[in-house]
Length: 114
Length: 109
Image (cartoon, rainbow over all chains, first blue to last red; front, side, top):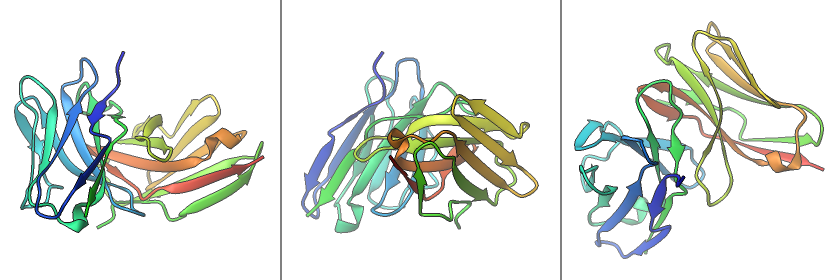
């Protein structure tokens, strides 16, 4: 009974490169959330997706960041032209449905931009 | 705009005593509250939750209290154990989850 799987666990990118973070939700979960944790800060909501739909992207930076959750395959968080300020831990969480269901988190991807 | 606040960055407790972690929120639309525990290099792990229609929920050593009039949430751990040492996040839900900044709990043997 696999939990939420995120890969890679660690990702190093140079400024200007692209970063792709993948998340496979728990079996039976169709709702995926992405959160970012900057050093010394709490978890900040980025985006909430269901299969093939973005439900809430109010926490996503307006530029360079995008997310998808296709019908088949994992959810992808994509950061184009990374900058040093993008260095953070990115956590994915999933749930079976909205409201009243706790989110189950993966172990995160730690992105370092050099 | 910090809608969920944990005003104590850290808490130190002796093993066997009670740990009380506090959380305040501002948005009266929140209808579900949760506590998560996080170890370094791991994702947050769900601990306990409470619906806005209740004022207390208990699960073993963990009890969550909700005071809606004060917009205040607390987590009680009793007795505290060294393995409880971690970062504790409170979270509030109205659709998406909004997290507090976290409190580092250290339980000394």
